[in-house]
Image (cartoon, rainbow, N blue to C red):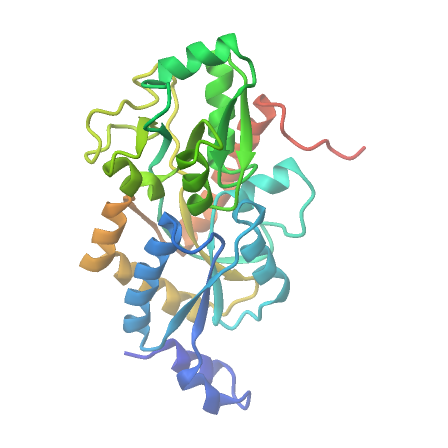
Length: 317
């Protein structure tokens, strides 16, 4: 097996080749440590590092609804395969909502699509809300007073909750945070009435400290068989916010292929499968070319959604 280091050495004659064998790959995770994305990406990176034969270090670079990390990579990282990043859907969505420093169509080298999330809405176990209907009834009588925590403005949780509110005929108030650890703390401490996030809330739900009101998957979660889906509640929606890995623009195809193959094998690792299952994540593999096509498709579909919500940025005259 040829490690990425050897590929880098072949591609970079005379460029400090003696340093390549021990130089680690940095994988930017644009969310705080301890959340579902961080834990799952660490498991995937650990497996991929063994396949590549060199270390992969995690750099938690949170902020901007998951876009600060990828944007920093796009602006400053060399396209040598030693800096890559998890790419959340906000990388494609935020440029449709506001001016940003990156172009998702030009500033990244897409490597592999990995998986998606199970999203859900929780409330404190001490809350008055026993069901989602309770939330809707209260919100209709108290417009704007129901607060919900998300991992950031423009995230799938924010967009999804606003779509749900529109369909329900209610007004909710978003309180944005940087990631799941903060949204857990917010709803657990009843600083917000609800939390909309991925399954970093599962341990608290299992412990009886949070109450799960709904999930956004196409079918009920096997871990929470008594919790209804959005569809069952009358909302024709499925949200899983799929994600993958990319590097900065201009990466050599041979290095891309090496990284792709390692992360693809990592998805078959029993330890990775177990970690993903813990957070209700289902592998959703796409190769490099299919991932590129998917980026175009998801950008077009996201534009339709945010235009419907009136959240698209104004076009320059």
